[in-house]
Length: 469
Ligand code: MSP
Image (cartoon, rainbow, N blue to C red; front, side, top):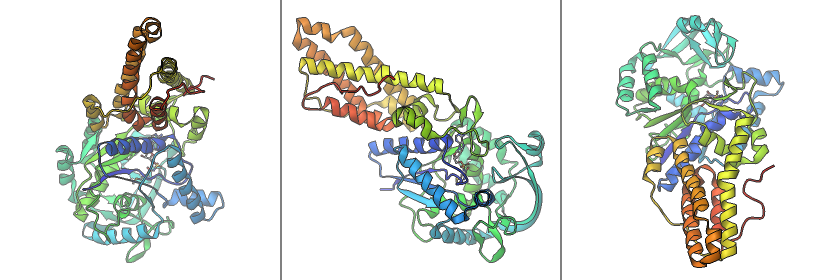
């Protein structure tokens, strides 16, 4: 069986993991858990993008040898992924020997589509890309994502002839053979495609020391994006190993700022290598704070640990996966976060506490989780509308709250114990049946609920699941 292969963007290691990175990992984790539930053999790649001048400069600023610097930061990204209760099966660091060697082999395979040329243009180091004169003018000479002026670079570089593949790229995207989700991003990208210039795929070594040497030309290193995009296949062993058990990727998860690389340069590379296209690119929005983009280069990032420390990981996952749209921007403020925590406590925490207490009092036991279907949920998940999938589950939880209030098992128990037990049994059964799906989003809580209600003797937890401060 071909593996269900999910990829995540590999962050630059010039700083610590931030909330923006968390989106990639959380979405990948939701998809991983969902696909496992559907019986797929899932493979998830994660990694770190460790080359390029901004990383080199950051290490120099901190007076740390660059290899030591990237080692330390790669470790913090790995720890970060684990702290989100997300898992990867494969981790690639672009400074890994295997990756470097495989990238050089890939370069050689691309050679029919590579030429050398000199170029003068505007470059943003934050984005690690040249911008067109039009973009330069539109943005008044400043990168809007990094709040920094563009630099003038004039260099002799190698180019990848994107023009060779534009028609093919357009065709696979239009036919959804390479499906870009959400659809408005697909349109946005197709509008860009015609004007997309050939891409410079190397930098002079005297400008960028920290990169993979171009095979056969000691004066050049690879452009960091070529090295980075290749990670999705080098991690599988390409071109030294057969990758057909995993490639093509089923879903590549990326933020909206890097779609153009994944829908333009990457497909061009894949066509040149004669490899199939990924099936889907899932594009998420930005995490903003009070409406402003967050990022390392902007220096306004709220450390995710700070949020997790407040109420633990589950409210963090709940907030970003339910209140954050899968594909639009999601804004964080502490007020909204507290409101979401209260929702968890009121809708779910209270329900569990009330039901468990009533079951204990009235001797309801012997509940088991049953396998159920939920087509509406599957439809949302298959379209990668994870927050709407989560909403469906939450709606079921809210319905249970209504039912318990209407059916009042505590008062029925005074007159007809058997009837009260029946009501409770039915409520609890429906609650535990939601849990296998709930586990996709808030794993620990879902597991705890199952534990509480499938115990030999049901009793209320000593501390509620979401204690009020
Ligand atoms: N190194 C490249 C990716 C190479 S993938 C072959 C890069 N790194 S990054 O650190 O800038 O971004 C990594 C991921 O985090 C990207 O998906 C990016 O969109 C995402 N985010 C970075 N800042 C973000 C927000 N403020 N909000 C949401 N995600 C954003 O780009």
